[in-house]
Figure 1 (cartoon, rainbow, N blue to C red):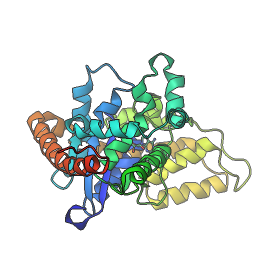
Figure 2: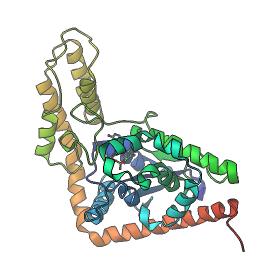
Figure 3: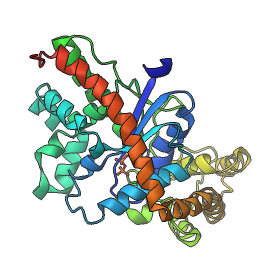
Length: 334
Ligand code: ADP
């Protein structure tokens, strides 16, 4: 535990533009945690290869993820902000952990089953062992807290299982990692069409990206699924209405949310007005982030230095853990 602080680790795949789900599920927590914890945040480039084998866009995407994290308030001087592939110990720990992960439990993972359904012609071994690589990323720094969205809950459960298995077999090396959100509950930012979550590479017209222009934000919000409104006072909200209220709670003031809750409950709500208000509040939230990203992306040399410095911090921590791992698991012959 360097400096006596608890250790935090998390990552984002460079598979496209970051969106509101990445922000509220992950980055908002990163930014708050950087002052209280010893933080390791990475661009998960190796993970992206499981579903995005074409690497033509990879460099630009890696730069974008870094720039978007920094534009949201992450300070590379306070945290280790690095690229997964710059820490080769990750691959070594992944290999050891693969001996402790069983085919049956990996095949049952929800994200694996979803990916098989979406892409039946690319069911590679990396996809199957994705939760093992993710465990290696986390426990390589002996991290305790992992700020993630709700979609990662099962992966974190598996990380605890694999870490505990290692400890049982070879002796206590790793703490049990826990999913983390400042608001206690992990969050899922829903997509605007009422189906599933916002995502980098799926349902792009129903996902709000940090790079979207003001007009694009307005267009997407105005298309969000609604209906003709409640007919009975105090009715329960259908899922897709619950979702747009959730989005409003993320970016609008308490008074605005209260005003529309009241209008919903007394059946006077007009979804056209609701969506106009939500769109303007979204624009005000996203526009300042978007404009910072462009400036950061323009400084390629600066980004290189940030990656280098991040890799140095991550390599140091990884090296220390791997010494313990090799010793505990009997792989030391000199
Ligand atoms: P994506 O699914 O968009 O490709 P990643 O898999 O790279 O995103 O996840 C990066 C982080 O963002 C993870 O912590 C994940 O839990 C979080 N995240 C992704 N989508 C959402 C969402 N819609 N709501 C909340 N958190 C999310």
